[in-house]
Length: 280
Ligand SMILES: [Zn+2]
Image 1 (cartoon, rainbow, N blue to C red):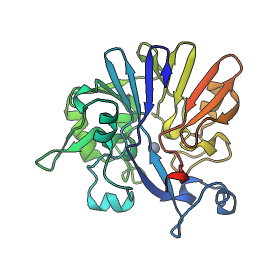
Image 2 (image 1 turned 45 degrees about the vertical axis):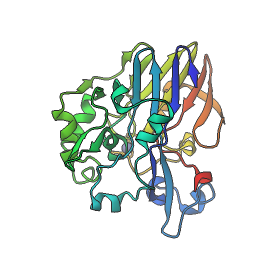
Image 3 (image 1 turned 120 degrees about the vertical axis):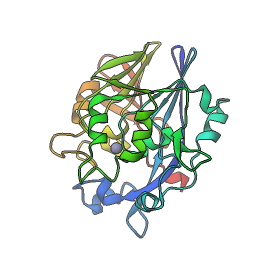
C-alpha cells in the first residue's frame, strides 16, 4: 500500500496457536466462540504479521515474529505453524536481510522480537538483519531484561542479550519521531513500554498497535486479553481514545481496518497477531 512517499506491506512471518480463553481474558467462551473458531484443545490461530516500510533508502521492518531460534521447550509452549517465512517474504519484495536498514520493535515479547535473530551455521542466534539498528522503548527493554515469574516465558533473556551485545540497539524514550513520518507512541497498553507505530504520508495515517490491540475484535473494548502486565491499568482504551476513532469497517479479511476519526481519515493496520480463519 502507498502512503505518501512510503510503501507499506504486511508480512506473513508465520502463525501459531494460543489458548483462546487466555486471549479473551474474562470473556466467557460462549461469547468469543461465536466470533472465532477454536480446535479441540481450545487453541485459536494467530498470524504473525510484521510490517515492511520502504521509504527512500530506508527499508524498515516493524516487529519480527518468532523467527527460528526457539528451543524445543519453547516450541511446545508456542506451537508454530511452520518454519519462518522471512527470507521468502523479503524475496517477494526483491529484498535480502542485508537490505533492511532498521527494525522497530513494538515490544520484546518472543512473538515480536525473536525474529530479529536467526540461527547461524554454528547453531547460535545471530542478527537476522545485520545492518539494521533496532529501535525499542527503554522502559520495555529494562522490563524485558529483568523478567519476573509471570513474564519470563515470553521475555527470552538469553536471546535478547544477543541483540543487546550487537551494539545495534537504539533505546527510545516515549513518543518520538524516529524517521520522517514514522513515529512511535506509548499509549499505555499491553506492557508499560509497548509502543504503537504511526506512519504518516500524503494526508493519510497508518497505525500499527501490535498487542496493544492484538485482534480486530478488540476494537470492542470489553475484549481484553490476559496477556497484559496489569489487567486493570493496561487496556486498549488509551490507544482508542488517543486515535479518536468513532467508526470502522473491515477493508480485507484479516489485516486492514479503516477507522474514520473526527478530523482525519485513518487507515489502521491491526497487527501483528490477527485471526485469519480463512487460512486454516
Ligand atoms: Zn505481546
